[in-house]
Length: 287
Ligand code: C5P
Image (cartoon, rainbow, N blue to C red; front, side, top):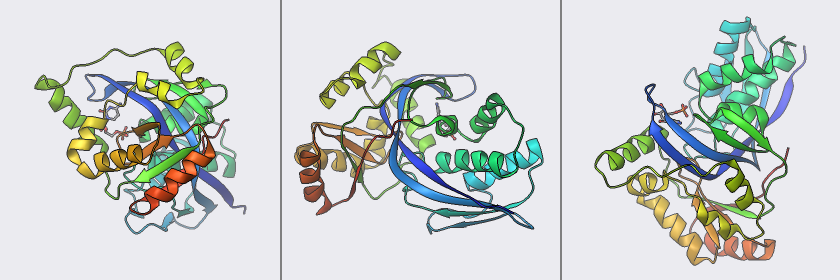
């Protein structure tokens, strides 16, 4: 029987606005997700029993893994047979790049193709959201404006062209911990809740030639991550000192991205940062 080989890409958030906490415990968010050209590689094939092999030693290769949970959910919903999943990891875990979420969405897509499942996009998106807030975005890819938990998605044509650098501070940040810390800062009056800016304003910023325009938008989880892991704040400072015009954290961290107007400036900063950090060049990917 056939085997599906498929790339499982990472994302960054160009900005991430966090609104009030809802009754279900999740926070209302506003963001623009951006697929980037850093990917894990996944293969899925039918097998006598379900199994998972993952190349990263710090990622659990069992039912705690979102890729395994994607199979379990599809098995329960659509009776898909057991599969062997192999994940070649390149996206760091706990990095705010959506690696686990992307793996889950990619496994769902692979199962649909492998077993020619007769499911609607809505059913697939519903299953994706059960697996995690960022999973529905990876069914879509490219550049998308997201509201709700991030599942109310609107694909945006084209993507900004700014050459990117990703800087990995070497420590993970837990997403629930980052949201909890922000809720604490707000409850004690240290931080307020700022307004969402709307899709049109965000789109205007993203079509600008100058990445510094993104300073009009924010990542509301930055302060939490910086306080929980000072290494993240240090990586952001290092990127600014290396001349990056626009520096921001992705998702709930810990990855810091920097955007440049040209490849030469980006490559100069990359060389400088690589002396003290694990840093890589990346580019936005359009649908
Ligand atoms: O959906 P996901 O599994 O990524 O969420 C992990 C945790 O992050 C949630 O359990 C919640 O504590 C927090 N979170 C949140 N609001 C969101 C997304 C995540 O509070 N919109």
